[in-house]
Each structure stands twice: as C-alpha cells, then as structure tokens.
Image: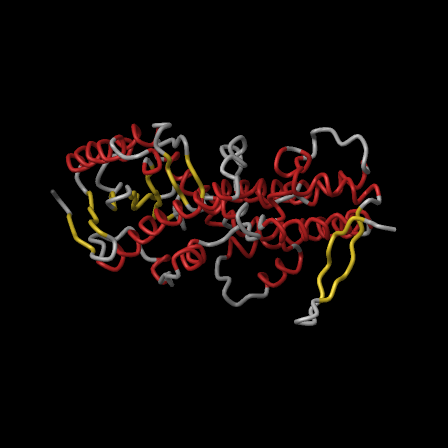
Length: 383
C-alpha cells in the first residue's frame, strides 16, 4: 500500500495519498468498527490547514485514528468526500478536541459530520476548565508533554517530513485514550447524557460568552466580514475567532495590550483593533453598570462555589446574562428561559440560587485550621 510507515510508540500509521488506497482503508475501517464492541465504535479526528493570506482555507491533512490504527490522509492528493459514509454514520462517534474549526473546514470541503464528540467541551463538565488545550488535556490524562513547535509548520509542503507526520499522528492517537478516560469519568459521575440535547448546537462561542459578550462578538464579526470583503482576504486573516472571543471575554485592557504589542505585524489586525477598542469600551461600561447589582455579585460567588464543588466550569452552568436575569426576577417567576433552572444545572446550582435569593442560604468565610487559608462557603442559615 502506498505511503506506509511504522511508528513504534503509536502503532501502525498509514499515510494515504492515493484514492485507491483510501478506498481500501475505508473498507478496513468499516470492518474494524462494525466488528468492535460498542464502546470501541469511534474514530478520533483532527485536521491541519492553512488559511492565512488565502481567499479560502486550504485543507492539508485529515488525521483519523481507529482504536487500532492511525490514518493520515492527504486531501491535496485525494478526494476527502470519500470519507462521507463514515462521517455521516450515526453509529460511529467522531471524536475531536475543540471541534469548531475542524467541523467548519471539513464542511467547507463538502464533508458534513454526524454524531461528534468534543473532548474540550466535555472536560468543561468534568473540571472547572472551560477551554482546555489539547496539550494540557494530554498532560492531565496521560502525563505526556507534547511538543507543539510544529503547530505553525508549513503543512502545504510535500513531502511532509517524519516530524510533521509524527506531530499529526499525535493529535489523534492520544485522543483515543483521553476519550475513553472521559467516558469512564462521565459514567462514574452520571454525567454521560448531560450535553446530549445541546451538543450539536453548542459552539465555543455559545459556551464561553454571555448575552452581552455575544452582542459584542456579533459587532466584531460583522466588522471583520466587511473588512474581509473590502480587502479581498479571508476573515480569519484579519482576526481569528479565538481573538474575537478573547476581546469579548477580557475587554478593553486586552485590546489595548494587543494594540501596543510589538508582535503584531498584521496591518489588517491593527486596523481591526481600532474598531475593537471602541466596541470593547462600550461592553466594559455595560458590565460595570451590571456589576453594581449586589444580587448578581452574590450569585456569581455562589456559582464559583458550586463550580468547584462539582468540578464543572462556571460558564457551563450559567452565564453572566443568566445571573443578571435571575437577579432581576428574584426567587419567583423563574420560568424556563434561564438555562440554570433546567436539568442537571438546576440540581447543582439553580435550586441553591433560589434559596440564596430567598434568604435560606448564606455565604460565609471559613478558615482551614491546618493551612490557615480562607474560603467562601454557602451554608443553610440557622439563625
């Protein structure tokens, strides 16, 4: 078979650069998956692409790992829509880490994905980290330090060297064990179905941004799109989605630091930051007005307590917008419009929030006698 290389630490790694080879591999994967136990019917997936200074993103590699083998597919040489059968198969779980961009790129190339799982997203209901990196999650679960210096490698060049192939393989090989470890933790904590209803609609944007920040995001996104059309470049060549989210979350100080950074050499980005500074300043003013609401501040404190108690990222339980709505509504007329009153969120936070607003729960500071450290706790009132 064309392009075969062996990798001791990862098992067999197949580099596929001919469509005939890909067709055979798909048959092999189909047999392997369909004959495996239910818990082994998954594939881990990642992509390598280039989008800077290009009109359209260029997909350079698609990495797929079955429970036994790593496949590195060259979409510059083969038609990746041949993967449609397995990517559309609802019985096969497609496992990504931070899936948003990969799904976007694959969709752009005509490959839609059904039944996907995002390890970054699920880690947010297993720990207080809402957006853990792949490098960090590999270290957490496998105690392996990944080398990430090749992340900005030129994936367009051919042939790819051994280090690039190893790096690409690592991005899906370790993900297999992380996925299985996560599933065990989700089952042990009875959280396996917590995100079933919302997984397909949840994105990095909606997880990490409240309503006010989303309004800012939309303004930034619209301005970036107009700049992209005028300057004939891809929107992310001006500013990445991650930068937009950081502006919304970190506010005016982050924008000003970026404006004065010596590392910013992109003229489009510098121009974009001038607009972003104005928008971020407006958002900061709105948030400062909201932060004066004492009830919102109390609810934020309670949210942090519940987050640590249950090992769930605060933004997965409730957004700042949710807390402000709850503070305005008080303990009555909750309705179903506030997500922290639905399902598991209500069990770990919503009910306690209502009790806090009714005065049945008080926040108090306790000191650890052994360490002398202090922490805030939510206690049922006894006076």
